[in-house]
Amino acid sequence: MKRNYWVAGLLSLCLTWQVSAQDATVMKYAELITAEALEEKLTYLASDELEGRDTGEKGQKMAAEYLANHYKNLGLVGPVNGDYLQKFNLASVTFSDVNLTVGKQKLVNNEDFVFIGDGDMKKAAKADLVFLGLASEENLAKVDVKGKLVGLWAIGARAQTVVSDVMEAGAAGIVIVTMEGQANFDRLANRYKSLSGRGRLGFEQPSKQEPIFLISSDKMSALFETPVEILKEAAKNNPESIKSQKATYLIKKTTKLVPTENVMGYLEGTDKKDEVLVISSHYDHTGIDSQGRINNGADDDGSGTVSVMQIAEAFAAAAKDGIKPRRSILFLNVTGEEKGLLGSEYYSNNPIFPLENTVNNINIDMVGRIDYEYQDAEDQDYVYVIGSEMLSSHLKIINEYNNITYTGLKLDYRYDAEDDPNRFYYRSDHYNFAKHNIPVIFFFNGVHDDYHQHTDTVDKIEFPLMTKRAKLIFHTSWDLANRDERTPVDGTNTRGER
Image 1 (cartoon, rainbow, N blue to C red):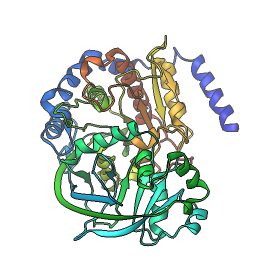
Image 2: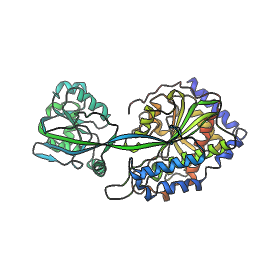
Image 3: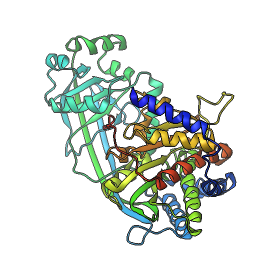
Image 4: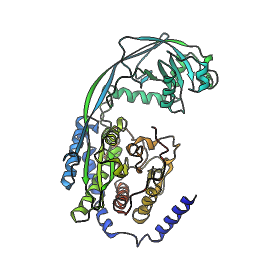
């Protein structure tokens, strides 16, 4: 309660001193962040020439070269032994043969089910498919899951947690429902189908015999020859009432290495140069879809990436004029975000600068558009801010102060709730810094009809609004890089597991 009074008092003071607190120097360099400059960069980054910047593909490599040359031309340092690229390998796993038959029903991969597990088998296995429903202790006491394929009804539950609980109880594999409605499942299956030829990207690791098949609620009903409503009720109270089925399954996979790279430019600070502020975005996107259409990713996350580029340009211009930041700044564009936050995970596990010296991560992922919530609003000058007060009591206040002083955006915190059903906090690269107790801010414009579609193109970007958002991030970054004390880590990470 005391902290809330202090925050309110500080913000009131900020409002009182808004005009006199403006810093002419920082405003001068903020003016280098223009709609024209952002549009010029994004027009290339989100062009058809880069083929959607899919991780490990030609377009992603072209984007990496473009970013590295930008930082080099600004006079920033390549911090990876003189290089601007942090190179590493991912493993592309292709499940060349995945079969599932239940009773007399032979299911079709990426139509009737989506394979989301792991495994590599020499021959097909047979097992009973039993219905467990909810993965509660009560249900596990009623249904013998050892050596069985287990039907889970995980709508509204954390699938990763329930899968782990059931596999630890001795299940041979899992057939799981996580969403209601055939249409929702079909959209997911179509996306998996479009990606299946490219392989599933991740870090190389030994195979786990964990056959996990995601199916729709309607398909679960068909497999157990039981209406959906009865299954839903049985999932809670009497899963043993659902008759088991005979099943056969087979999984074969191949693995190949895929080279990729994070891109970074480094600006060394002055008296506090050992402390590092990281300003990040992901520059990869989803490539070409199953119909041959290019997913340009103008908003996701071309908008964040060119914002980082332009913010770097403003800081570099100040440095050339002899106004270097007190703390060092790492401008970091990561790869593999669309495959599971892979580039930022690699950096956080293999940091160029010690994580204990990393004071903050400012992450920018989609700042070029107006979302569903604001598309009909009278005032559309907003940005969503996520994660800013979890680990440090100062960070949110600093950002709000700079917004009041310079940009006047509406800072919307609706997606910062721990129970946000969208789980946006877990879906971008700041997560891999916050999990190491580094205070973060994630700037985001929300989703729209073109999210992850081939229609996410440059002509739909709101460049004046995007410019204002980028300027706020610059002002907050300037403040964090130059203040006397780094933001304290006086909060608790309450969102540790994805």
